[in-house]
Image 1 (cartoon, rainbow, N blue to C red):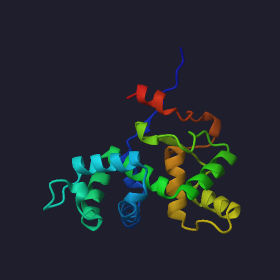
Image 2: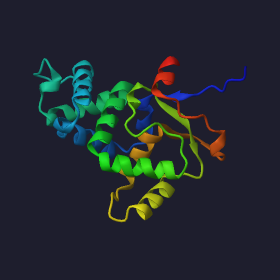
Image 3: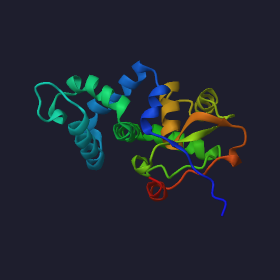
Amino acid sequence: MNEKKVQFLPFHAINEFMRPDFRQAVIVDVLQNQSALSDLQRGQLSKLTKKFVSVPGFRNSSSAPSALRVRPTITAFEKHPEMVAVILAGWAEIHSSLRQEIYDLLEAREWEILPVDADRTKLPGFLTTWPKSESFDALTAAFRDANQDGEDDPDRISLMAVWLGGRLPYNLEEDENAEAKTPSPSSAADQE
């Protein structure tokens, strides 16, 4: 039996690819728009905030004002993969139109990805392979060509591609067909 092993990087490995100011902007965006999240997302964020975020003067950190939670949430984001997954899932939910546009772009470029509404927080992390021809600049240019009046921030476009694609550009591969398929959340959970 010749099974190909699928390698994952834990979700917090994304910190090596994010500028600190952009990481902070994403976290602020999610914390300030927490009320716009689905009940499930809001509940997961609250649970992890209670577990990993400490705000002086608050027994329950999730009840602290969002401005006071930013710095300790950044620290949790840097250390805990489950916090990264929940923050990114929330961020993608808040930016649902960008999420759909990037999903359509990746599908048109024949990426093997989970459905747009799949719960990516159930995955063990990011796949380690990335198609060499699909640089962030190339994806941003293709996105801008397809969406003249849409999102223009390359950081946001790239982050959404990373989240939806379920992979980080850790190992660049020439041949897209040589890549491991993106597993479904149920099969990925079996590998934990």
